[in-house]
Picture (cartoon, rainbow, N blue to C red):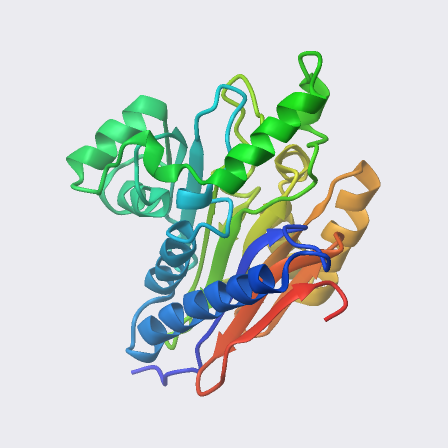
Length: 315
């Protein structure tokens, strides 16, 4: 029987999602929400649970919080709706599940997990994904559940600045805030997992889908290398296959996780003009959090420790 290892979990609540001029109460609430997500995941791991269950638990808490662009706090599309994406992946057998463009699933990450566990598919979208989730017994809600006044005002500001059909805004969003949430974990058995969930971009059009539900772009986990969850301008993350590229540099390029993440986020992504960041864990248990934005809501927790939460790049 293999000896148990120390577990560790790391999360993010989006890159560029908060600035130092934000109200102090808002900063306190965001830090508390991140700490709660870490403790929730930590309780799963401390009880002998799997990494896949821990990342799911962490993401559910952030989907339920209005402070992140996922689940209840998701941003609005140009049509005034909320379209949600999520994905989850195991590092032991590379099984994965994802949903995209859903409007009525209370916790999209649970739908992604159901795809992983109970279907032969990896990615389901739109109405079909909602039908699958309902059949799986997941909680379904009316679209109004996801509405928050703050996100509605963000849409109104975006609309006021968009005098023409803003195709370019898909790649260059007005507020430059990416509130995607995600988690990565290493459990006591040495297995890795990753999960990501988002509401996309404010004022997005045409059923736009970013990197969050794309395995290899926004989410990837492989026991042979690392687990990664990303946040940022999805178009760039898809083009670079950011999550998989980081893991490949670790596995095949023999780079440290820190060097691989910096190469992709501070190097390749930045050279293309993309913004964002990642949280990642390698099989040895080391945690890396890299961004090329002024901040990224993030945190980590290891067995026997206390939650470590940071918001700004210079923390």
